[in-house]
Length: 69
Image (cartoon, rainbow, N blue to C red; front, side, top):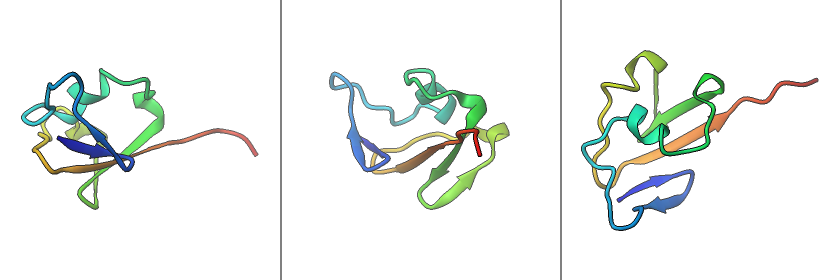
């Protein structure tokens, strides 16, 4: 199980452990062009999403950027 934005994620008993951040994001409604991801307190560069694997107990913070002024 991982925690995303303070919520435990374990969809239908399927863990995201061993999956990449990119694979996780494909299961969400986040616009990957307008987000930043922090894994366990460290910002993950977008270029590393596909190679950064998740493990049980990981914590992600996903921040969406909103335009405006």
